[in-house]
Length: 153
Image (cartoon, rainbow, N blue to C red; front, side, top):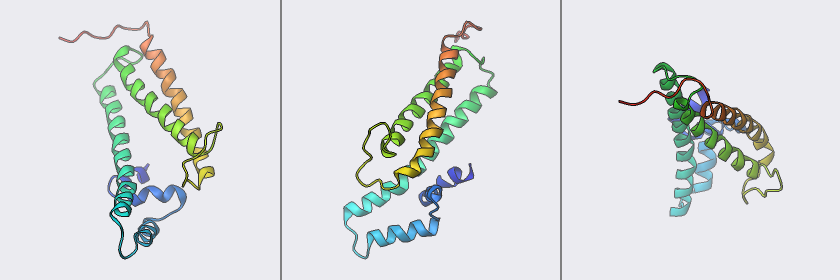
């Protein structure tokens, strides 16, 4: 939604999922860094703020790629669109596995400093449902007996 779109412009906006405002995020990070932050602390904070922005851009690209395929009239249920379902499927399976680990599910141990594991369970459910839907779409499209993919000139 709008929160994801806003993350493209400010990494601290991503933490709203955990009821942490942009101002609170900046304050927490400033406290973490202190008055004389080490190079490693600066790098860690930089990555913590950059990665949500990169992920939001990934979502934007995948979404616009899907819209492009629809607008360009690629035949639904064919191998032409299977590649889009495949990209979404791999993303959803991988991110669901990451969330599952950090939520402590399926006997997996969360990363050492992940302390809000219980808050990640809804993300496991969300990405798990996406993985099932994208996998079904991929299987149906890639095994389709519908119109053959158009040959390229």
